[in-house]
Amino acid sequence: MNPYAKLITSLSLLLGTTITISSNHWMMAWTGLEINTLAIIPLISKSHHPRAIEAAIKYFLVQAAASTLVLFSSTINAWHTGQWDLTQLTHPTSCLLLTTAIAMKLGLVPFHFWFPEVLQGSSLTTALLLSTVMKFPPITILYMSSHSLNPTLLTTMAIASAALGGWMGLNQTQIRKILAFSSISHLGWMSIIIIYDPKLTLLTFYLYSLMTATVFLILNTTKTMKLSTIMISWTKTPMLNATLMLALLSLAGLPPLTGFLPKWLIIHELAKQEMTVAATVIAMLSLLGLFFYLRLAYYSTITLPPNSTNHMKQWHINKLTNTPIAIIASLSMLLLPLSPMILISV
Image (cartoon, rainbow, N blue to C red):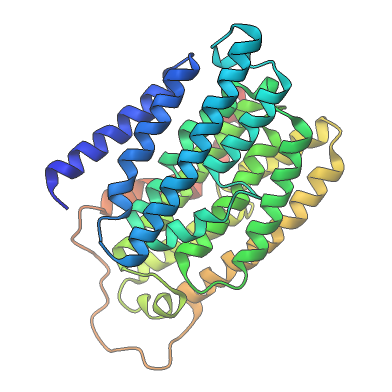
């Protein structure tokens, strides 16, 4: 890809995200979302592979439909109340339409079908952007309008997302698809709590982004796309694969690691809100996700392939990604002891 084109798309992504997260007016928020959508399309389709072109078209159609619904929702609200402020969404139809539009943007069930396909058609770096940066503006809009969302609809979609994200990830062999269903499952956790504690949703998103970035950057360094290649990648880079195993277990939410913190806080908050049934159901559904994370961790470190090639193990890789991977891997594993400080700030 031309460096100038890459620079323009990267700057547009930054601009679109900044406009959306800093705006109070619906039109500005919508403009930021549109800039983001148009900026990521060249990055999805840059390989010119038919699957990448298909992924770009699917992404464009879904995001265009969702943006139309956002505009429709804000216009109806402005028509009835005279308010274009993000925090003043009061009309019931507008609230319903906005919840649907943001669910489409994020890939919540039942609007999730596009997300695994788009991730599978993208490169690992673009998939990382789609899973983290591109989710930030819609989550910010949810955060700003959290008091006026439909609780029943949001809770239903959240539990369905946690269930389907775990269930569909069980049978996959492509790592990008597994991580797409992992993202859907985590979005379920984020959206179930946003009405009751919006700051906790943001904390969950930040920690999820950290852990996902670690996994994607390690996979990008080892050039691993599917389970059959992850089985032999440990012979080349044993330290990276050990780090990958810990990052995956952190994503699964196992206690000594960072990923346990948001799940623990969400279940605690749901219990405080007397939603013990929802807390129990979503905690049980996270076991489905735990299974495929454990399977990935098992493949990455414990499986011995039948005919591994004999060559020098690369304990040190001379690549620029070393330092970022080291920093975010440490954060995605070791933040749990800081939870009292995080709780005070939240």
